[in-house]
Amino acid sequence: MATFVNRFHLLRYGASLLRCQRSYTTDVPKITTHYTIHPRDKDPRWKDVDMERFGDEADVVIVGGGPSGLTAAIKLKQLANDQGKELRVCVVEKASEIGGHTLSGACLEPKALNEVFPNWKEMDAPVTQEVTSDKFYYLTKSARIPMPLLPGMPITNHGNYLIRLGNFVRWLGEQAEALGVEIYPGCAASEVLYHEDGSVKGIATNDVGIAKDGSPKESFERGMELHAKVTMFGEGCHGHLSKTLFKQFNLRENCEPQTYGIGLKELWEVDPALHQPGRVEHTVGWPFDRHTYGGSFLYHLGEKDAPYVALGIVVGLDYTNPYLNPFQEFQRFKTHPANIDLFKSGKRIAYGARALNEGGYQSIPKLTFPGGCLIGCSPGFLNVPKIKGIHNAMKSALVAAESVFETITDENKTSPTVGLDPESYEEKMRASWTWAELKSVRNVRPAFHTALGLYGGLAYTGLVYYLLRGKEPFTLSHGDPDHARLKPASECKPIDYPRPDNQVTFDLLSSVALTGTNHDQDEPPHLTLKDDSVPMARNFAVFDGPEQRFCPAGVYEYVEREDGNGYRLQINAQNCIHCKTCDIKDPSQNINWVCPQGGEGPAYNGM
Image (cartoon, rainbow, N blue to C red):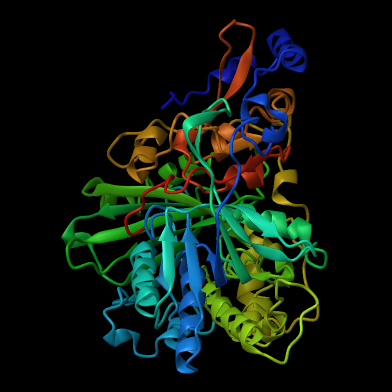
């Protein structure tokens, strides 16, 4: 792993920067070697390589083995088994094992789980610790001020459960396999396949055995095609295939751009005397200023083997200061006087990060298209004020599964395309409790964009939402997309973050090591650039290289060129933890995250 340092600040102004810019307009080192940028049909090294792919057929293929993908698979097999019908359902998951890429707080509202398995409490589900205490605070740098949690407010957690989502997803996988679902972990879906009529045909898994320079190795093997009547995409937030579907079918024509946050999480073992199983704490305020949307969570888990707490922060990716560093803000949060004693006597066990959807009701795209549909966090059903999305992701999967099953088994229904469109899914979703829930809180998140910032958002939630519960006759806009929000570095003040003490706060690379992430160093970097000249010519020159700060894994750094002629961007793809933040926040929209080889990435254990 490369050393993560901010050496490039030496070139922020003056002739050195101009010289560096000129060197990148005429002599740009090649960074991207991936075939999505450099097609193999134009590369003579691939001329005699056999590119035939073998295929397989299923009734339904589901991309993503998370809460929504597995819930959809379970519901499809429940419906098929109840009606005595044969239905082949396949789930492909890029992690090496189910749950390996799953990360969330997590506080589960069991509403959808009750619909999937009404008797889940008798099924050894890893959902045992009910919330016993619910607190909400406003933080200043030195104080913690209690905020009232009135009945009916989105953030109240009575009746919810504290879980480790990775363990819950693993359990869902076991239930799915018991029903006859075929699950293929370590298989990364890298491409959407289309019929000649333009409808979705299925997916292809990624090729393996490609060298870092983009050439075929002797071990090269082509991926496999999986064809289906309907393909369901449950990739999670900002899925790399879902992005292509938005464009292919113009699914965002009638909605606002999605807005995002990045969630960073650690798992700690703490002093048993300080552990309060079932306690929930949420905060707003410090360490963020009033114009930066963000908050924290701290959950006292009810594990049998150790007194664990899960803590984290979420930072809205609509922040404007390019010097803001979400990882450093997270470390600083732990030093608050109300927190530090808990961690001084504890031990950090795990770390991870993941982007999340925050657009809610205004940003829900069209959900179906010929040959498939979007479920879970692929379209984005997170309830931001509630700080929950698992229940809505699962509900969308249940509704979609019902529509897909009806579409496939209705012998009287004719389709204008080979790939079937489960079009009733969207109509049923609009009639669901998830839709009503998201509509009721639709104005809370954009209320933070007023001149009052945090205070305006809190006032809106505490007054307008509490009185009207979403019945106000207007809908606020999220405004510009996140990547367009950054101000030039010349207009912003650098943020001075304290050095880690290695007891409560830690450096980035030791944190990344806890994720267990792994990628073959001899494969093309999956963090691709549409234009290798843009990082230096624009991101560095205008925004002082924000990608090295917004990435929570040290993937991007600006290093001195070997010839001494300025600086260049270095991509440490092996560090990537698949959070997708770079693809979202890059102010030039030049970074395109694509899937690496199957089985690579983080190896979260119950995060």
